Length: 323
Image (cartoon, rainbow, N blue to C red; front, side):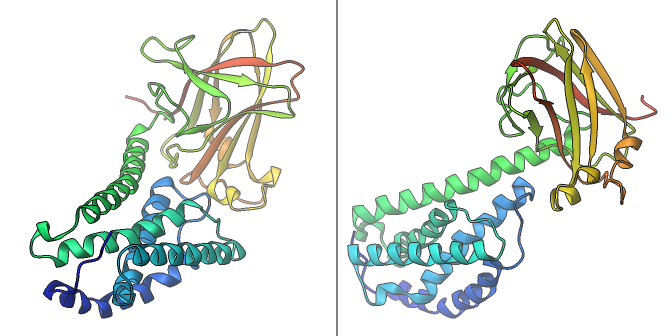
């Protein structure tokens, strides 16, 4: 795990130090001010997280730690330093109302390791001069970077899907609903539409038991009705509550009068509920619901005497005039 001796390429890297320092000074304040909060879109959070890799790569370039250390000592010292600094950053962020994220520590390390592993390769004129352990480390650091970029790619694909999903709020062809929903639910072939599955929702006896659709198309302004199709396989009616939050409510104090709530009583068998979006828009007592920034749809039961199951068959918006 040796570091290559200085070469003309290394001196070229030295000339990058002022630029790296400028980058560090520009990016460091963003660790503590600005950026996505805990309810920001998955894509914006994923892109923002890549900044940790960039920042710690620039810090490593600016410090040039290979001026003092070589080999294993260089890697150990840089890794420990990145962990200590990263932990300090997470501690400060938690005091500033930012949500600490342990995965940021790995992203910091990826930035450091990329520079340590790839600098000898880029500085060397012939790849044969680089020792095999450095080639392995370079490959590992590149794979870690690709993994992080892949998560951003997945977030991008999900966002593109949401953008073209309307008038549907969820694609029931997904075999795994967990990227979009929270709660005890799973894709099921039972009681689905002819060309798609349903979502089997398990309801318990705790005070509130249900599911939450957290990633959905946010702009409902072109529509006037929310249509919900459910199937109650039980022999008794099933009371449910449907709740809708916009982004302002999520960032507020969770007041009951600042969101939309409605009670549903599902009869045995199929049920279809049509809810006017004018009622949703007017639900908050002291303001209008922001129909361009709907953030969450929830279905839940309250204090059920025994566990129940319900199937969600369809969830979509409808316009007053349809082709």
